[in-house]
Length: 272
Image (cartoon, rainbow, N blue to C red; front, side):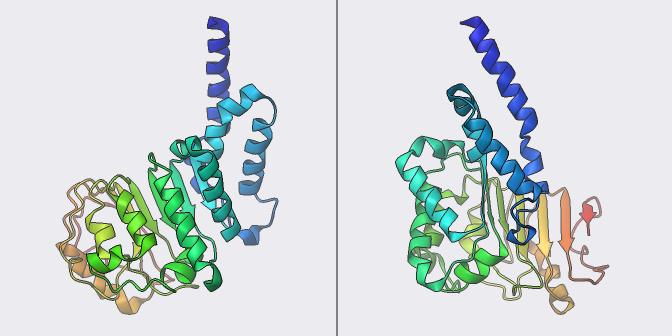
């Protein structure tokens, strides 16, 4: 029994070294990179190890579900169906990134799938939304000029609201060449009191409640500046209460934001 337990521990250490969590964000998952890019190869390796034996499957299935990136709408639907049939996998999901294009005809099933997935992942740590998902879904059929009661009427936003208070990372990442600025509903920010990492574009339309946002645990703030024309908007962030902020990352489309950090303390580690 002891030898078997030790064997499992050794295998677990090997798999932890082979699939370190911090490397997931370093790989380009873009469909444009083709089927043989490092991200795809890594995913295939995880699947291959699971198929080696029952013992390997038990030890490595958590690595397959720990960090999930959805690149196609079919993947989102398949994930929802898997978690419906095997709900025990939901507790393995720590990071979920949605960056699939959602056709208008599939808005309903996409919303249902997102709701089921979020409700099935009680230990979700980080939730990210990419350019394609935001531009084709969040800003298409789900207008977000919202107060809390209006937000609650939308099933997808309601599902996110149910879980945002437990999240430690939230990102709305857009490609400045492919998308316009996106500002999430204010309740998603005001209720994210436990967030330590937040990524969003600098708002071009400030909604009620955004000027006095309080995120006491936030340590990393990444801001996407679409054009130099809305650079002045960053000064309004001076009203945000971010006592734990350590890192400020600014993403700009080819111009130097030499005055952008004015509202923030000079002790910050600023990444341009």
